[in-house]
Length: 119
Image 1 (cartoon, rainbow, N blue to C red):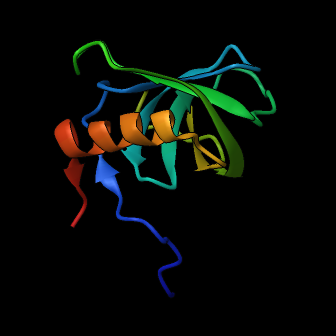
Image 2: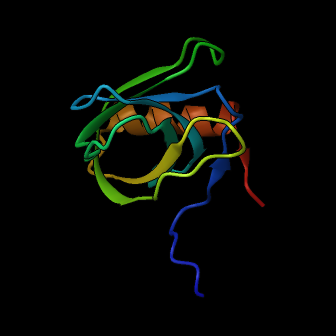
């Protein structure tokens, strides 16, 4: 299978950067991140359509990082799965759309200062 990603992905330590969806009560944690989008995981309790148009990223650990109002498009949502007796989770891939210069600069700072490239 050919790699279709255009941007280098960065691994985000578990539980360090979270995502908040403006149109849902779901809060998830980011698994990996790039200049073009992200993959996040959230606890699946009830069937709910997740189709975020705008999200915020925040971290309590990385200098109280907060990046707000990121326009995005949903690329995929996985089927619910669980490990052992843990809660069921889903993964969702998002593509960023038309970030402004300030958002690009903040995202660049997050990628270069707090997370590690996936090799």
